[in-house]
Length: 250
Ligand code: PEP
Image 1 (cartoon, protein in one colour):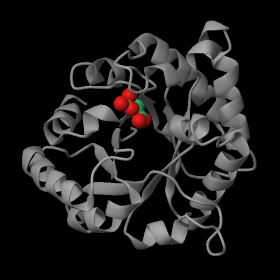
Image 2 (cartoon, rainbow, N blue to C red; image 1 turned 180 degrees about the vertical axis):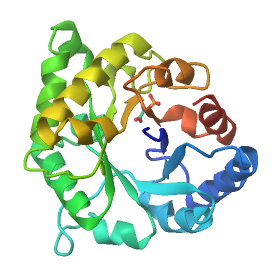
Image 3 (cartoon, rainbow, N blue to C red; image 1 turned 120 degrees about the vertical axis):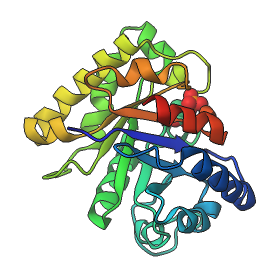
Image 4 (tube, rainbow, N blue to C red; image 1 turned 180 degrees about the horizontal axis):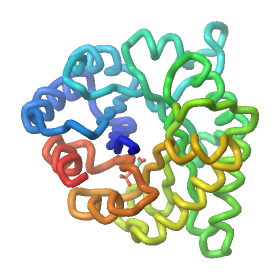
């Protein structure tokens, strides 16, 4: 049995004050009604410590949106795994398409980040997904396969402490979600690929999320798929009501 995850990616939204206000509303709305599902909220770095502190004991986890691959040093602007762990956060998003496509992050950087995060005890949520042009050229599968192989090169995994988010770039923030069937097809391929890398047993226990314009109305169709274990949610995670409804529909 894989425990579903709903992970909220707030991107560059919400101040510390907004984040804490969200937490109050969300905890109240959720009540005790979230057993059997893992909820992870990934705010901007500035809010991570205080939000994580507020979430402690609620069963809701905090996560970071990125991490660097060194622990200390002259890396202006970067944040290390140890610094993230110190805030109480457990998860970290790595290789989000906005980092890949806006900030030029490649598979090698993603790979370094994944390795270092795992070695430090953070659980990476590694994102993969094709652009619209790649899909239209019939390259969606080969792109996702490459991102998995390169991103996970040299990674040893004896336990399923790694989450993959399949996020077709054309579905992120556009209001146009992939069909649950297409997302399932890619998730099955991802699980097969993970089986080849880490063995079938570990791959069967790993969580694969779908991301791309998920909302309370469409989450049910995704989590009904045999290889989809939850979602990475951007826009619809910014309102407490909408995130609580997504959790309830999962
Ligand atoms: C995301 O940021 O990972 C995402 C899936 O965004 P949205 O839900 O807004 O498409």
